[in-house]
Amino acid sequence: LCVGVIVYWAAIAAPYLGRAGRYGDFSYGIYLYHWPIIQIFIAIGWFKASPTVAAVGAIVSVVIGAVLSWHLLEKKFLAHREPLSAVTP
Image (tube, rainbow, N blue to C red; front, side, top):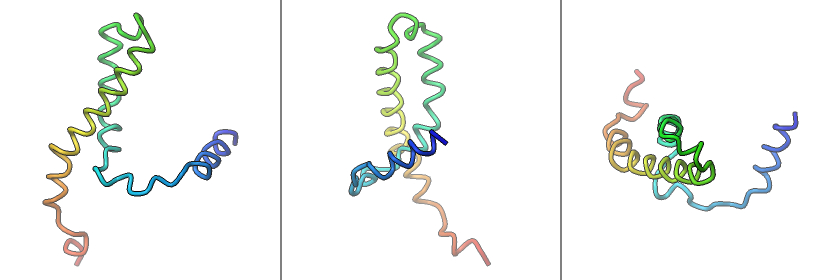
């Protein structure tokens, strides 16, 4: 219940972001790349040495990976898909 109230409050209190997606949809890239990048940072030992620096480095790496994934892969594949109305009989 507490988590639900916090999420609801955050959704209501958040400012309008306008056209936040005008540069691309990076959410799938973040979802896809966050786990392997964090695991690499853990395996290298960066989180043990300096957790704050490692966390910032992981966030920056994930965002860069997501942006590159959107512009180099995802956008091109989505441009070649058929509209849903053409697939259904």
